[in-house]
Length: 270
Ligand SMILES: C[S@@+](CC[C@H](N)C(=O)[O-])C[C@H]1O[C@@H](n2cnc3c(N)ncnc32)[C@H](O)[C@@H]1O
Image (cartoon, rainbow, N blue to C red; front, side, top):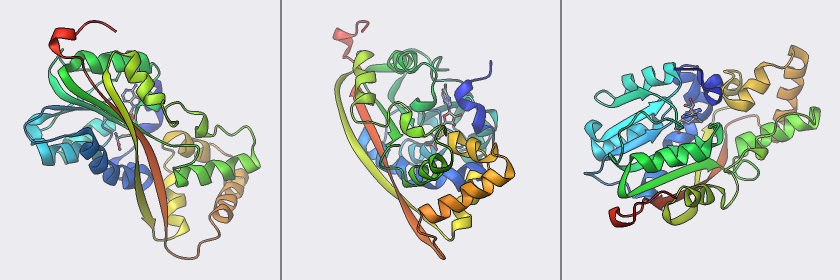
């Protein structure tokens, strides 16, 4: 498989991912699967599964045989297989899903579409693999307002470096963007919601060490700073958070959208 641009910073271990983002995505997965209406007896595809936060929730509801998962990151594919024995975990990208036509009742993408180079093709692929009347759902962080860890990080970074690549500019963090993508792909009855989770940190270093794994745009930005700038960034983030001297919590809000594939009688191209 050719390298996938959006997966370049996700060539890390599952433990490193969990310390940074999995600590949020595990609890988000339950809310997201509830809202998408995942119930026993369905077959599901987890697009961009990572080490398997959502995959695990799907296995609880559908059993391993009901779940197909895919991700372009080889370490994450290996980790997802190890964490969820019996699940068919394939290496693949959203723009070319490794999944047969009309074979799934539910197709889900949690915290993925903002990393995908061609989201329109990904949405068309999600429709291709869904059975008529099946459910598509996706969620992305509200980068501008709702994801405190990343908001504080980029506020600290841009205070020192106005050119820092604030993720607030990423697509799909704003109201309407995911639903618009699904409508453009021909999905019907689209709706949106927000999903809120929190994560607890034992100390500021518990938070800071997560960035030093170099995962995602924020982690990459942190680890590619020269040492003096990285130290300044650490200090700015500490102050940004109110100089915590003990445990603290951060909230994170995701925007989610869902839609239905047209019924068989109406299944035409968008
Ligand atoms: C923030 S992680 C989310 C992982 C998991 N869904 C979760 O909720 O923890 C983003 C994931 O998107 C994957 N990814 C990046 N580009 C992708 C693409 N074009 N198609 C599918 N997945 C992609 C990355 O490899 C990574 O596992």
